[in-house]
Image (cartoon, rainbow, N blue to C red):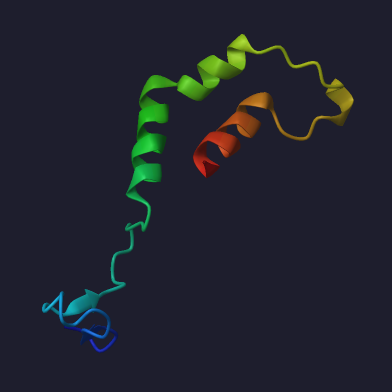
Length: 79
């Protein structure tokens, strides 16, 4: 184990006898694997682009900073 890890069982020692090990050495790791899976599915199927293509954008073109697709992606991935 590296110097930046800990093995200590502080909470629920009477019901969880194994030590908890926390390591932060993955460069491509994520604490939210579901978001990575969702992004891969979206990339493969193009669901957000397809949905954006079905919607009519009635906003004033000169005042738009983000496309409808970008707004949908932000909303889907944040949920």
